[in-house]
Image (tube, rainbow, N blue to C red; front, top):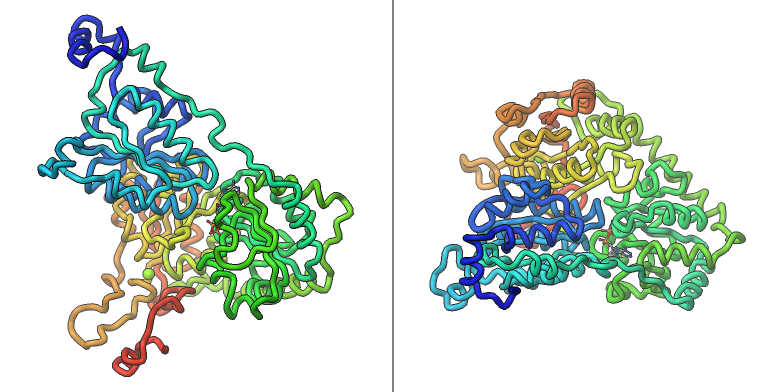
Length: 590
Ligand code: ADP
Ligand code: MG
């Protein structure tokens, strides 16, 4: 007998020979395993509680979080780190919605992720009869995902998982939603037929080779540049062709800027790295070669004051997504394909007699880098108490240089902007941060994923505000005993801790927190190590201890209340008006 058997026939068989049957739970687990999934980031509950237990029983690593958003951020980060879909599993409606933020984040960042959510039964939901956690999840997920599928029959589980895996990975990666109605999991079918229905996806991430004429066009544009610049984005870090990218950058000899999560793809201390001369190279360059980076808001759309005179630059861009071209500026030489194939073909085309840019250009950039680094150095060595961002992050810069395999997780406003520019990264994919949307709350999910997926020590540098979005997950860090050291840059508030109520009332300002909060005591409540420090030397000692022991550690680092800036480096994005300015002397200038 095969799939033609009715569920009643199969139930009868279950009495006498259950070992000849399988069910939706096991088919889903088998399908994920067959496609290389090793870890599920999970929050249990109806209808997927047992799915998590069975997955664990069947040899998958199942990491349970306290809130779905963080399980989702972990899956998204896992997708970035491993180039395989990170899998998050949630309950229906509220759990699904909590996970959806992370799915949208993965899609926005072009990372492969699969959100599997249990859901209520179609028959009841579609008639809006008021089912337990009734919601049309598939429809809601669709605009936030690269693709969204629902599986209704056990014999389609293999197909559904294969579609999800391929959609997540192929071309520009993204988030995929997989809707799993509770009843599907309990459906039974013949075990042999079930096994046959599974699909192992063949070549989900195929090479995409650029056309020869696209390559020669790009070589011509690059050759004609007098002041060229390379911008390397997190797409290049994701692509995992580190040696090829490095060879291309070194052969071309252009100064380069790494976007924040591409830091370390080439070490930030590389002689061609122009991070410390960012303003100069953006403004003065006449040709910009984008490698896995988008000209979105993070690069002010390739225009405006930072970019110098309009129309003076040519752009060359490598991207796997054809429609990315001309999204903000004219791309004179689009290279559509995967970074490894494009970079490899370029290297072949430019050959060994490539003329590097003039010393006049590269020398000017190096001189600016040197001057800025030297100007900054003494500030990074200050031992002020309470600390400022330079003194505290100067210590962390030093410790990351000594421990280049540590994965740095970073979020906040000033804690983010300052750490991004101060802390050098020395190896690829060793920095995880707020991504394209600038999300607050990615910290603990990313830290858990980094520890699980790489096995390395993790250092999470967190603004006290950002930490508030994900702080409960320190219990998860302690429960799994992960080598995660969290440094809370505690300045008593959002941006700054010295905000006042502009109406003069008794309530605190909208941007401040309890003064002198002891986040370290929270960590102790879960059995982790909690340390309170208020000067750089003490911070250094505490982080060193954490790295040496590998124990879950939280360091409450006291930062001066007035050390930060409103919105860090992106205060210009805050709207303002003449009315507000007339009413409140403190308001931002129009
Ligand atoms: P950043 O924020 O660091 O500038 P973005 O996320 O804006 O980076 O851009 C990453 C780009 O990389 C996306 O446009 C994406 O399509 C592209 N990308 C991702 N993987 C690959 C790949 N393997 N080959 C080529 N391009 C890729
Ligand atoms: Mg703060």
